[in-house]
Length: 344
Image 1 (cartoon, helix red, strand yellow):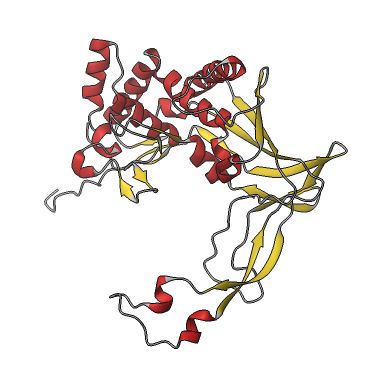
Image 2 (tube, helix red, strand yellow):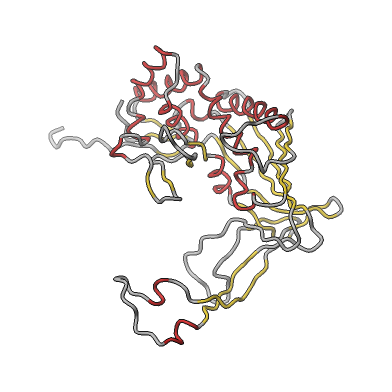
């Protein structure tokens, strides 16, 4: 199957912003930022060395000067022992078919791929992985390292809660309430990813037990230009009762939920965020380089081959799990446009 000139999928998982807050007499209170002026040391490589590792002609005093900074930070207020972080997640079965596809034959093949994947229980595998990240609090990022975390997940009719998620692991044993929550949420997400006749929404809330003055790590805004008099490091915020409270960008929450790709190698030691080329930011390398033909674009071209394998064996290759995970993520996957000959 050749990729057509126009092909795109709408994402199936749409998270909202995650907002931090605490409770005071059952009332939501905003977790506000501190604006700090500080004198940071000059410690970067370029302060003393040129590009070819030659020492710059500097006086000893030059490297002892401070680097004044104005930044935003966030800390737990005094007498607050619990911080909450909440967001909503909308799930739609958008991977069953492309939103836009310029080639009817390509559309038919991709729809057959999704139908076969659904029939063989493939969406249950994806759902189980998304559920793990939701229940493990992966989306809390650095804030996961605190004194205790409980997580509550609500759907329209169901609710699950785990009182201590700190010891849950991707490849570990899930027992008790954790196992019940994982199985229930996986079943719900599996149906949501493969059923276009209903709407599916969940609310997720984490309760973090913290110490007074502990640092909180929300999203950081990307600043193209530094403005005099404004912090050079700014944190993401939402409004709670008219006051700014720190938050996570929806994209940061979504990135954590999508940390499910451990199909990139047989001996993969960690799941990567679903990405067409398997970007591994920790090692700054592509785990699915196009040269190895393990990238999304090389694999989706083999859709007809995968259909034959699945229909014959009744099993789903890991490469198909990855392809479907990318389609759930959504995006524009158009191939090169075909240029017409001058004589046509």
